Amino acid sequence: MKIGIVGCAGRMGRMLCKEVMAGDGLELVGGTEYDGSEFIGADISELSGLHPAGPMVTTDTAALFAASDAVIDFTLPEATTHHAELAGEHGTAFVVGTTGLSSPQQATIEAAARSVAVVQAANFSIGVNLLLGLTEQTAGVLGADNDIEILEMHHRHKVDAPSGTALALGRAAASGRGVNLDDVSDRVRDGHTGARKDGDIGFATLRGGDVVGDHSVIFAAEGERIELTHKASSRSIFANGAVRAARWCEGKAPGLYAMRDVLGFK
Ligand code: NAD
Image 1 (spheres, rainbow, N blue to C red):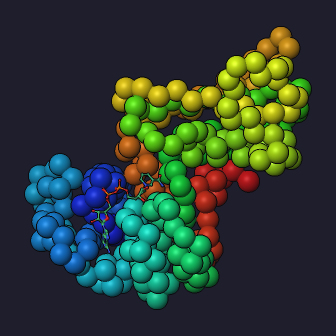
Image 2 (cartoon, rainbow, N blue to C red; image 1 turned 90 degrees about the vertical axis):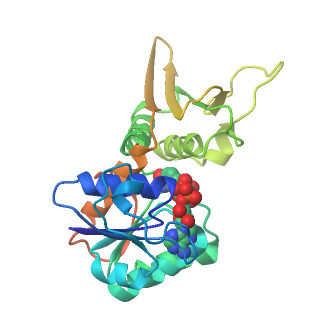
Image 3 (cartoon, rainbow, N blue to C red; image 1 turned 135 degrees about the vertical axis):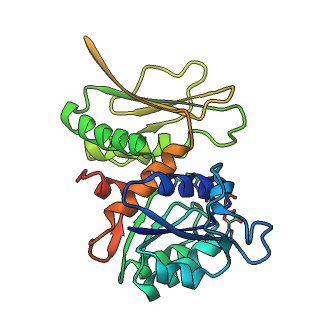
């Protein structure tokens, strides 16, 4: 399968190129950067920490889409919008990791998905997506007499809390219970808070050091407790999941898919 990487000199782009070059049955067709980037003409293998062996970084995005079975995009929203249009024009499967898309930008992804398979995820980690599926299933099986608490820890530089993934876990737990997270979310506890309200989904946040991302979902009942935990130690997990998504696209009908489709969670 032929894979192209747009934004190939970025932090994720380099990891994606390395992952594709190491993948059985995968060929890295090429990679692009924006016009004016200092990396145009650079050797992609070398950028990815391997011996120089090409291909070279170009600006010819249309040629990359024409030559690829699937293109993976972890760039910027404005660039992703243009890439989505090219995916539709060339019939190239498209894997989107770029976050922060506005509604009109998201609409271009949905337009492309009418003519090609598109996989989009805010978190491509296979482990996190498995945790999301398990959380929804467990919440559905256990029912409301289990108190659900979500605990996350990230490095000291993270500026938002709780993490987007913690909130996604909260939504998964709420969906398993058939409720809306906004109606049951308890995000701040401080001082004399009173007893825990039945059915609440609580959040707790820790910050420190260089933690890439730890998430636990705790189901606590009278007499027993279940804890589902994922710990990330490298951003390579996102590249690994995105490449798995690109492989999965082969032969798939047009549509906008999520990692839960790739992993077979329904
Ligand atoms: P980065 O800034 O290191 O890399 C982005 C790259 O895209 C840069 O090299 C930039 O020059 C390039 N680029 C910009 N415009 C371009 C264009 N028109 N054509 C080609 N290349 C272009 O950022 P990053 O840390 O690699 O993250 C990139 C995106 O991926 C962000 O939106 C981030 O939030 C997201 N991300 C998503 C996941 C996930 O699992 N979905 C994981 C990590 C990061």
